[in-house]
Length: 118
Image (cartoon, rainbow, N blue to C red; front, side, top):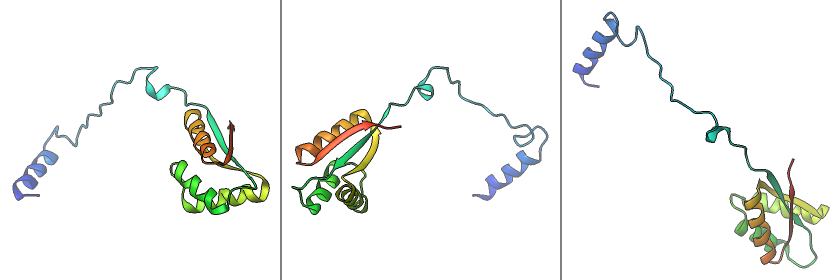
């Protein structure tokens, strides 16, 4: 900060009726019924079912390829849970995303379904 602007700041803060003595707070006008009050879309769970055909490595590869934001650890854990228990939740998301994920997984040979989330 330059010396001149520092001096100017001191004068404003020390003077009567300066900015610091009586701050003005403005808020934007937000009309009711705008985006902030829209309902969120319903959540659906994408489920991976165990099968006796696909190798574990292939299942992990397809999960990583088809589901956005899934890490390698997430994909391995989902695959392992489906292998051990018969089914595992891959992700919970909006219906359109869930439908897309299920379709992509099925097109790549996995057994997948979706169900309403709660």
